[in-house]
Length: 163
Image (cartoon, rainbow, N blue to C red):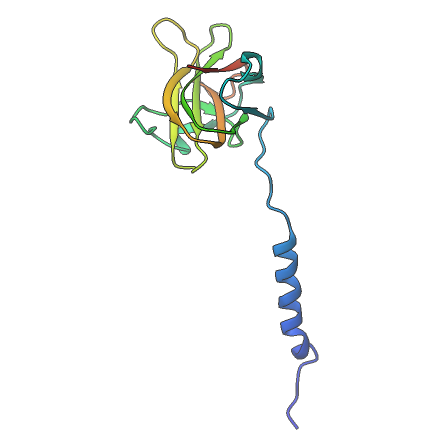
């Protein structure tokens, strides 16, 4: 008589049970440090304003070295995004502005496809990051507000404007 391991008859059952648990487990929701906000075309300007604080030593160029327009993605933040922006519909054009009261900030926005990257930093008139771009498709956007030096903490206001 051939020896059978006691668990032999249950091997398929365990696999089936494990698969059922994995399939039934909900996907982990995208998370951010300062929450999620949702916009639709014609939104009230006050709904496009959120608060946060910079910080972290993670190089944002680790997410992407350049954006879709070949602009450099620079700065330091945290691996987890600061905000999740949910666009319920497509937008022709949006402007994203950081106000940290004149501190040097950077901006990295990852689109819903995880491939479309938009980056911005200060300009000649302001050290705070900003960007204006076209063709924003509906979906979830991860937003990082960074600084030029690691671990710098600055409170900021992030404003999204419809153009």
